[in-house]
Length: 72
Image 1 (cartoon, rainbow, N blue to C red):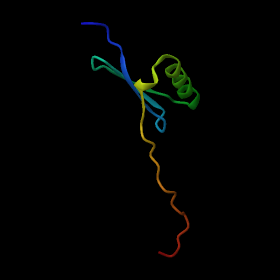
Image 2 (image 1 turned 180 degrees about the horizontal axis):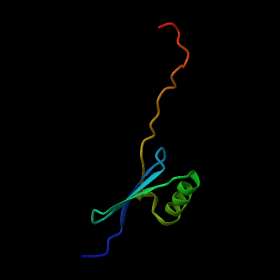
Image 3 (image 1 turned 60 degrees about the vertical axis):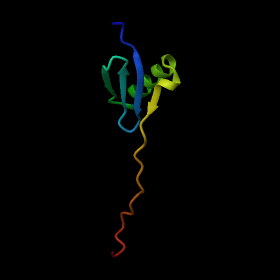
Image 4 (image 1 turned 30 degrees about the vertical axis):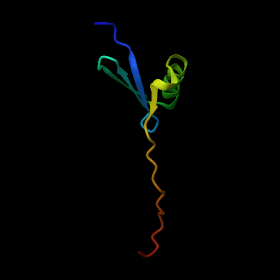
């Protein structure tokens, strides 16, 4: 058995969450409370992890609903 290492990282911008997946199945979740904390984690990832190992979750995008009732 060798040492476990990072196999991939999933970044969820909307939730300010980073999930680190190890090659032996271990999973670590980093939940950032502030934007500054999240940006610091992203900077560390950018400086230390190969880009092909980082995956970004799809953004949840919805059409803006009109808040004015048009008599429907």
